[in-house]
Image 1: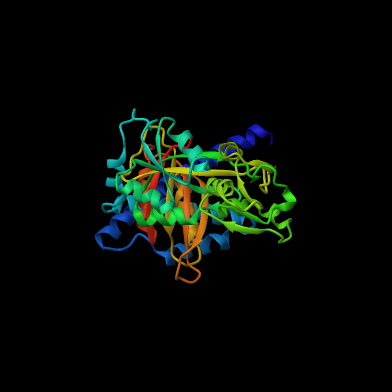
Image 2: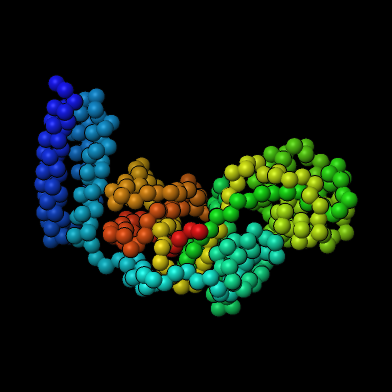
Length: 379
């Protein structure tokens, strides 16, 4: 038998699979109608286990593939049943009200709150996100939210994730607690340098200041100092540079940027001290009210699923069933609850795409808690 003949047989089998798939989904619709009429839930784990056990028993050496196929098939059937029986969701009206006109693009101007001082990486992110923006500097991440909440600023810019050090958990906590929305994002390549006053030698340094994230990103270099230098966290890398420039300690240094060296008149004792050249920080732009501008292609969520086997896989299978890519998944322990986690998700999708809003409604209904952080573009 040649290749073309084998392919013809595959085409025939595919046609039969499609016919049977459609028949199965129609039967699922009948099941949905029965459950609706009898006030039964869509989810029936006992029935799912029964189907999968029968598949495993009859699949022979193809068992792993058959199990995956039928897991997806069951998930698609549940999605269909849920859509047929679903009541109103909380997320749909929020998103529908957030959609800007299709031609409305993110503005280049506006007053924006930024944590730190001149020269901070957040300031560089502000300049990239709002090239003609008016920056208001504040001391803390929470103060950024407060400035936007009080209408002192229209936007706020914050770091949310570093490629080496992971997510900035405090920013996620503030987003969840204050119910703000992400409306734009950007990524910066971060390079760290050790800065000190002119004339200071590297061997004379006894104390180094920087932000805790920058300290973590330079862990290998700092470990090589063999504990001879005290490392002190501070509010910001630019704040660290300013403290060294204005301080009286001649043996102090800062982990900061080359821009801060020029801005505060400091000398570079050592450049590129970050652990990896692949060191990027992602920044977000927040607003008090959700707005989804033209070109939005990333969705950020915080989900809390049941603490039971297969719960996270069910969420991922649901997302995959809608053809949406998960570009970020990170777990975070829930404070005060042993061995329980929430999950940070980024999806490569727009709510304007068919089926995506329906997916979000489904995730809202099936998650223990659900926070929609925004649908936005990254520049």
